[in-house]
Image (tube, rainbow, N blue to C red; front, side, top):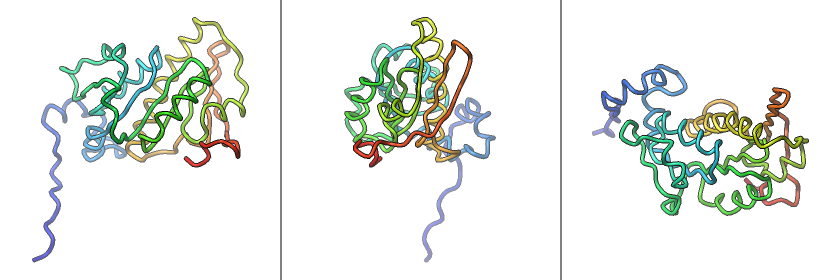
Amino acid sequence: MGAPVEDETPRLTDEQIERYSRQLILQEVGPRGQERLGAARVAVIGTGVAAERIVAYLAAAGVGWIAADPALHRAVDPAALDVHVAPLADARSALDVVIVTASSVASATESVATWRPRAAATLWIADGLAGALPPCPRCAADATTQAAISTDLGALRDALLGPVIATETVKTLLAIGTPLAGRVLAYDPADATVTSAAAASRPDCDCARA
């Protein structure tokens, strides 16, 4: 007898098919992609507007397990979505993606170094920059020029960058599109500009081995 044929019947419930109907019709997602999102494990490190947007968008996309600071749990209604929101202490085992959000490049770099070994992919936001390893936040900052802006504008900036990184996370989980790694995206709300530039790791930086 030959090997059993894998069951190709979607394992989504009727409720999930209705909830994610707009994603299921996308060639890049489909039933298998939606199942992959449901099985994914993602950790969001940090708090604030960007982190809150990321958690909310990933939960709405159907990512099944998200570890985050308790302050971010309010961004998700577990009763209305197929998601388990866990404390960061539960993110000890292997993760698919780690996302680091920080108010400074220095703190983001430190968090990336701490959490990176636990995940297959690492994305980050710091000081108006967004990227994915490699490069790390410090290497990316060295390759770009980002003007200081007011606190109020910083919140607006993070409100835009959060969904960008959430989208990049979904792309990473589904292995679709062009990854952000090797580039850094910068948003300046003062003059409404979004730029994307190549950013290589410094030869002496550990992020070069990502």
